[in-house]
Amino acid sequence: MTSMWAPEHSAEAHSNLSSATDDCGSVSVAFPITMMVTGFVGNALAMLLVSRSYRRRESKRKKSFLLCIGWLALTDLVGQLLTSPVVILVYMSQRRWEQLDPSGRLCTFFGLTMTVFGLSSLLVASAMAVERALAIRAPHWYASHMKTRATRAVLLGVWLSVLAFALLPVLGVGRYSVQWPGTWCFISTGPAGNETDPAREPGSVAFASAFACLGLLALVVTFACNLATIKALVSRCRAKAAASQSSAQWGRITTETAIQLMGIMCVLSVCWSPLLIMMLKMIFNQMSVEQCKTQMGKEKECNSFLIAVRLASLNQILDPWVYLLLRKILLRKFCQMMNNLKWTFIAVPASLGLRISSPREG
Image (cartoon, rainbow, N blue to C red; front, side, top):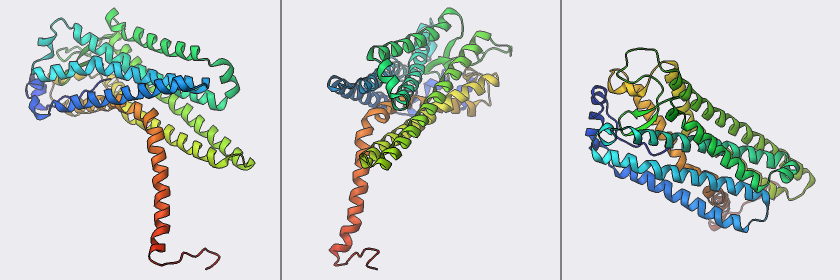
């Protein structure tokens, strides 16, 4: 996905697509540029940290996990670099997409890129969830079967499979089209705005449905594996506590990991669920965002779809922070803050000459 932070228009966009790009002054171009720079910095920093940690790690388990994070950061980074400049160019040109791309090849490239890197991010996140679940719940099998070479093969297989899927519209199955308000291209969910025949191309419906279903399936797998991992960690933490084997350390590790996994699930659901569900809803209702430029009364649906795409574009920016950068920064800072707050409540009464008695002292 990319930063679809283009200006929204209501009545003008329904009459002509050009009016959706004529009045671009309502939103500063600095906003999409800021989104692109933020995503670039976050993913580049994540790749740098992963590279350093990967060379130092001797554990195969940690190397596989770091390899997954690095691949995800690279996927998000390349996706942003390939698509965000196009959005900014169209946005600043104040011209219709058809005027800048009369052949439609740029639209096909843009839609293909969004499909590849959007779906790849979801599937890589799902693969990471499976990897964590296997490492925690089946450590012996994981140690003997999950080599670094196997991790590379899985990640490369995911990317190549998604690329083959995204090329289907080029082969005639499905279609990439200019989306409202005319500053980006994506998978078409229905007929073009100038079509009056309610019958739609079966290939377009099948391709759009497959994208949405694959994305939702990846979310379900990620949720299930993360919940299974949290459950296994809690059970192991209780066992360690009962045996008095570093229970405090295991409790901290379990808490940090559980918070991170829940954060991952929240970010994925908030960023991706609206777009995937809305795509299925539009397919079921025989609607396409392309109809926004010719039909009145579609403003609510068009705005909702645009917001959903914007939320999905945020996932590329949030990924490196949720998976890596915030894990040891914010979680540790949060624990330190809580400890400092606890000692503040103890120190303030002491500074006032008050004596804090224990419950036994009454």
